[in-house]
Length: 100
Image 1 (tube, one colour):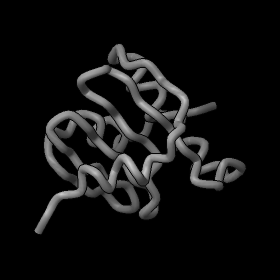
Image 2 (spheres, rainbow, N blue to C red):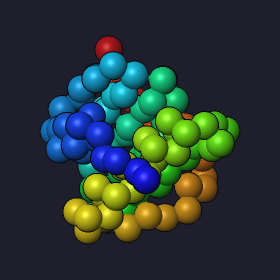
Image 3 (tube, rainbow, N blue to C red):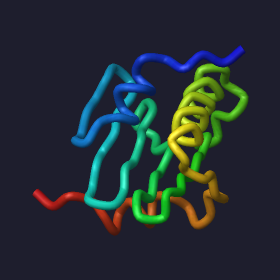
């Protein structure tokens, strides 16, 4: 059984960058990127109300499955639609990276 963890709820509701242990969200004007152990696992497009998930090659690991399932459950409940993760997130993310 999959449980939505508190970090899922806090990060999904966050309107600014936030880190909770191994979980993190980076917020841009129309996008949010969620990270787990430094790997981007979820990308949210606020304009289109869509999200993409990526297991980063760790799909068989129970904690990764739980992490992705939690984001899927909360985002779907908020009216977002899951789409195919291609093209790879990293290109999209690099286009939005905050400049120092």
